[in-house]
Length: 445
Image: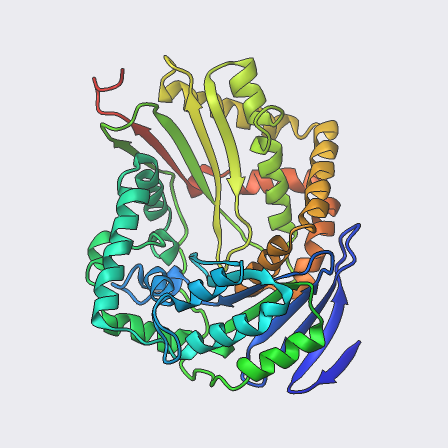
């Protein structure tokens, strides 16, 4: 059913998942801002999320970290609010707010009582185009992000290894550059860099507003028209045409040693396809593959074989993120038992994967995994933040509301032979990076 409501055209649709009954309404304002409203009247709370279709993979060369840097600076002053006033106002209402940056998007979110949505929209619309930055703001916050890199990356051998693996995996695509940025480029980020990035990309025609909770779609649209509607679009928004990877012709390997390592481990990443509009079946198969191989710490294929049967590993897992703009990676990690070398751990992993490709998926395991995924989907509907996250992330990478709604049933529809076909395609060592993290010789206890 389509209905005309003020400046926006709204379409009300219904979630396809079992047990879900919340309606989802979609709008687009004249300035290009997309709006998704998810009704859930079980508690008098509301979540507002504004997703900008701009992330670290969209940064100009030599300015790595600018997307995350700007995320921090967005909590400074605007022409109507003092620095820090946004979060103070949310806290004064008993609410919470935060933000995060990924390769593909930057998102700002708040959770308050439902009757405070007016305040959230007014403040979020204000900082969308009216941010005020001083040199002192930039200097102070640049030190904050450098310290964040110190704590989260430079002090962690595992985080540093992840950076090296991504850089080896992506020779040409910007997914090879860390979201937080390379330190030497972060240290050179300027006020002008931040303002240019902000003015070009923070605009309603590059944003998705998701409102979830105890709300009425018509009232949400009226508020959005009032606050976001007058915000001018940017004429600098460009299609996301990113450098793509050339064919990978051989496995890439690296060994990183660090005196801080007490427990060596190995990891491997393979290039893997992502969810695409109207074409999500392969990604769904890869999600199921990750669950079959490493989703459970006790019953998945890798833990069962490596930790319980052969007892060569303390920990093992498989993981995959399907919701990206461009192809991402399918990943494994193995932490060997004391006395088991990384050579032995890697050989054991390869043996298990070869056996799996030969024997296939146990039907009982596959049925159990699908049941658990379905249960997680149903329970996830109890969290309005999770609902907003699902829709916002998907729309920010180019998927549609229909794609989001099709996803749960698609996960149930994928057959075991499709999962095995996806496994044989993705587990190609010519598309892999294998990495070892260890201590320098003679340092391990």
